[in-house]
Image (cartoon, rainbow over all chains, first blue to last red; front, side, top):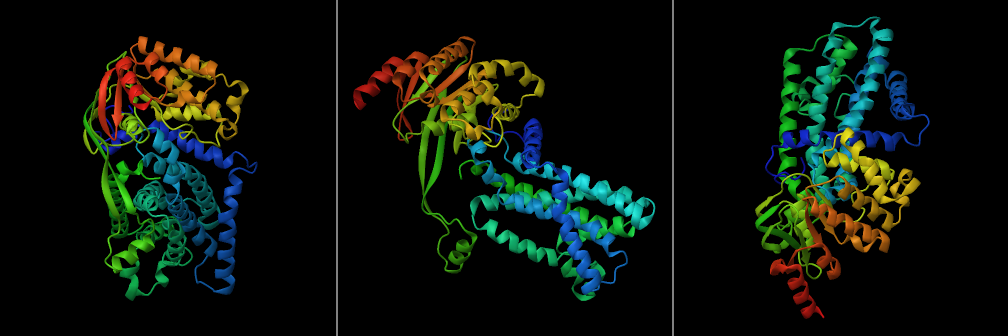
Length: 267
Length: 242
């Protein structure tokens, strides 16, 4: 209930639960605005990642030859995960500004804006993953490996990890207007620092500890093992990524909550 | 609805660093990142509005009226003090600010209802009333970006009133609509009070204030200058401001 005793009294998750109807409406609105004027609909959003995938596949099988059998299958198993993170991180830089009017005229927990963006993106991601899983099962594994059963858990980790990055970034972007210019550069660096188009085993042993400080690297490796290699990941890796994702989420959400009361006051 | 000893402090910035690059440079030069001083937009604000009561906030621009409404609405969090509201609070504060201009009027209505925590079924019950009151006709199916400011005001007001809130906050929006719509609004607001709603109005139209409200508060630079019946306070305000 809005304004029951002001916004400070309730715990954040009770607030979000109270605003679930808003969350649903905003997520639907995001999809509506996006697909309103495109007859191709969902196929249209697939064109961009598919083109990138084609280019990557062509370059790394024919020009720079990366020794990975069924390289296209390897790419598919991680690329959409990367794409999800990329889009969520970009969204973080403008989502609060986009709804400045709403935030100034009604009281609601502002993380709902971030969560609804995540929800609508997740709906698209679900369809993408369904296609990826089907393609890998039919053309790569000729069957459904048991490891695929871990996919829901991996998606959960992706959600937690991305929110952990996106929530504090959204606050930072609300305070500092050059964040939106810095983010594309950081994303480009992150693209090379994460195993999107190459497998982790090509990373020199010596720097691998450092390399895995990037939580996205661990997460993508899990997707590669589960979807591409069709095997269960080592518990240490799974546990490590899970712990990192939960921790990032909790810290990110705490940062967001620390600053969210002043968000309505800045434009 | 109750405000007790509410203080709202804002910072006025002589220099506000708005880019990370500058934060970095200032950190290296050991210069302060922000140069600011505290300013009390509201200081020691007390207000109690019971069901069925109407209270007006009057005062010159910048006296803290709109800030008070935002505090009651829960959009701002008080620096000190308590704001307590019981039941559903709706507010028409900044004209059209809450609208998603890409969406149609009808879609905006359901989005706004969702912000208020309405279930879809609850909204369906109230929708005919909202549409009838807004009198937008087929325009309700057009994106809000094509609306005139009067039409936006009608839609915002209709939704805020017709969802039957317990506390209704209105900021100067009656000024926008045409004469006929204004009359209907006034009637509707009186009816709202009769049915036990608590009304808080910010207005420069003292005629409206006297018509709608039993009590009034005169705010000056964040403090309550005078409190009393709407007649007393508006008369005193008029004496001083000609």
